[in-house]
Amino acid sequence: MGKDNIQAGDKSLIDRSLKHIYKPLIKSGYKIACPTLTDLYNDLKEQPHERAHEIALALELFATGSMNMFAHPTNVDMSNRLICFNIQSLGDQLKPVAMLSMLEYINTCVMSNERNDPKAATWVYFDEIYLLLRDKLSSQFLYTSWKRFRKYNAYATGITQNVQDCLSNDTAYAMLANSEFVCMLRQTKDIDSVVELYGLSDPQKNYLKLAKPGQGILKMGNNLIPFVNDHPTNTKIYRLLTTKPGEMEN
Image (cartoon, rainbow, N blue to C red; front, top):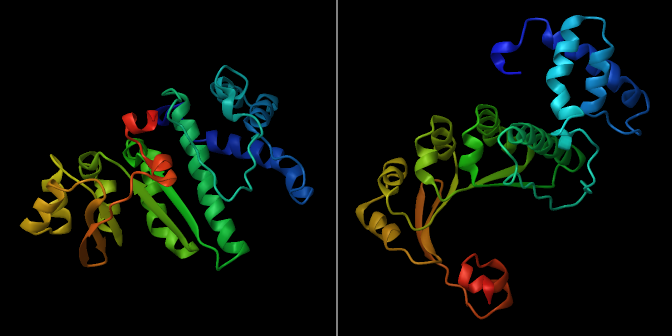
């Protein structure tokens, strides 16, 4: 609908429907299926208020229309220890909905894991994190979770090749400055921003500029540690990990 189209009473109308569609789930002790966007859409249509019908119409595209991908129960076993979300191929209209669903699940999972087993650690990896930082809602989630996850024995890791895109983003800059552990690999045009953020010396700057695969600098707290981690290229593990197109073909 867009933030400019949300009226004062819209949240109350949605809240009415949420209470109604979640009531059977709560009454069952969370043993029946969870409500979906389709249930919310149908309940909004049943409300007598005309504005509720307008909200339902705005939701129709994602509930029963051609973009109803997230309006159904998942067919993935969400009890797996390793879960990967891939939103790369989604279009611009579906991507914000996907990100909200994905990030809300991650947040709930982190808190549930800590509640069920205080000693268990949850690892959350955001590949191409700069894409999430472009959206205001997902950017705000990342900024908040970067601080909160530690309280729930969870560890967030952001991965990106586009360091400059992150350093030009105020939210991302604050996240990087607040990170205890950073692994810096070879840098070229973005090197000056990295030098300024982490206070690298000239030798450390030149080391990053000339670094080969498997070389870089680790930041651990206030310590900066150069490393060399060459991996044999004739192993099965290397063939599984490599992302070089020529090597992948072989």
